[in-house]
Amino acid sequence: MKPKGKIGIVLHAHLPYVISYGTWPHGMDWINEAAAETYLPLLDMCMRLAEEGIRPNLTIGITPVLAEQLSTNEFKESFVDYLNMKIKYTRENEKEFKETGETKKAELASMWFDYYNGLLKKFVSVWSRDIVWGFSQLKSEGFIEIIASCATHGYLPLLKRDESVRAQVSIGVSTYEKHFHTSPAGFWLPECAYRPSYMWKPPVGDYEPYERQGVEEILNENGLSYFFVDQHLIKGGRAIGTYLSRFEGLKLLWERFAREYKPLDEESEKSVYEPYYAVSPGKEKGAVVFGRDPVTALQVWSGEWGYPGDFRYLEFHKKHFPGGLRYWRVTGPRVDLAYKEVYEPDKAREAVKEHAQHFCKIVRDTLSQFYAETGKAGILSALYDAELFGHWWFEGPLWLEEVVRRLHASSEVELVNYSEFLEENPPDKVISLPEGSWGEGGFHYIWLNDMTTWTWERIYECEDWIVELLNRVKEQMDEIDDLTLQFLHQAAKELLLLQASDWQFLITTLTAKDYAEARVVRHYENFKRLKKAIDSRLDAGSFREEDVAFVKKLQDVTPIFEHINPFEWVK
Image (tube, rainbow, N blue to C red; front, top):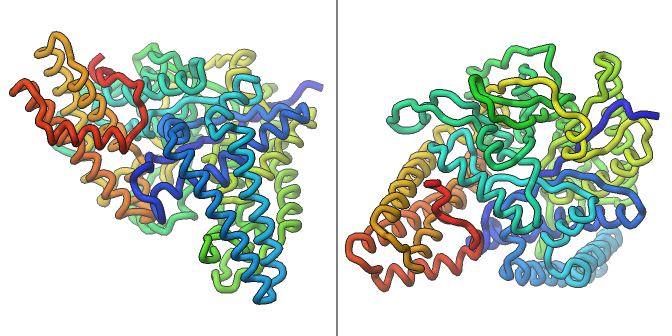
């Protein structure tokens, strides 16, 4: 029986650069938690399925800045220490609960011991302390597809210069090739944020309008075949964000922007269940675009009425100290943390099976309806942040495994990756997309608002500076000495880190506002000092000793992107 439709499940894995920039509550613990709760469980799940002869066929995006961090010795050593610390606390918690007669919690402490001890053994013996290598192996054996993304998750529509957009994309591609040994076909736009070509005026500062390249043109120039956007950019209608229920800061901000929000007119002839070739008006270069399915998005994302909010699942927010381990279940949507009930793993596993069955039914019904209306076997794009699975929603990897198993057994729906799909189903329609993102309201307000305007002023300043600086170096130096190149290389890294969209998101959501603001200031000041040192070198013929010591210190703090060429900005 020929399937009536296909589904692509896309997991976008990303964290900002945190090595040497704090530990807890903001910093290194973010990446350790994500590795323990998401990345290793996903690896384990995919390998388990593969060994059973089931092809997971997930599409996984690992951002360059995340891949670079996971590959450092600093992370590998820190992660082993982190797992050993967790193992220590499981034993201490178990002893404490036994002494207080809390039998169920003592059993859960033993469960956590098995969990973290198992992770440690697999990290060392199965994956050779190299998570990126593990994903690369799965990819090379054809079990999953891995797609590329921007170097540091820069928010492309708001970057001031096309040179910056090109650098974010091209460095993203070269970093992918470094870790996965092939060229990528697909690309994840940070925050699914897209901008077509038009006479664009920077939203911050006093600048004249000028024509910009469309994002899809730059993807095309880098050999990329496809990307993803939110459904409203293809079909119109109301943009359905997925972060609003999770962050109080967004709710407060959205109350202000909601009055001005006007949904795009719906276009009934377009559908998110088929691919299109996207080009900007009047242009020729483009790429294939897929639209996110809104129903499955909210069903999995929403903490209020989606699967993660089920009363049987592990409660994310309540933790036992010391150790930060979790022993309680969601219990109810408005149950105070003080009244959460003890977690019951068997009941959580029951919920996993129920929700996997429900999800597969939604997918089957949606694709069957599209087939009945059009006679086409469509593709449903289910797009999620990878960290939702395991970190925010502890049972997420188990749910995903159950979904894959059910889809493997289905004769009606086929789980595919996007390269395979496009080989058999190239788009036959060309469209132009409006500007927007997958944020609530579908535009940029999460990343550009009263709280974040100052960050863009600094980013724009540095974008102009790096182009001016590189052009000056090229004009004045016939041969660029190694030390000057080191300064330029570090300046490029500081700009990339400054451009990360994470800082505006953390400021707006009020989740780590002080930390994010400090990071913006730090990278801006680092860039300024490096630029001043290079200017001085060009004027005086040498670097000061204190500036050489400064760049060496920054190199130690950021042992990433060693392969990049700073002249990417002036190609």
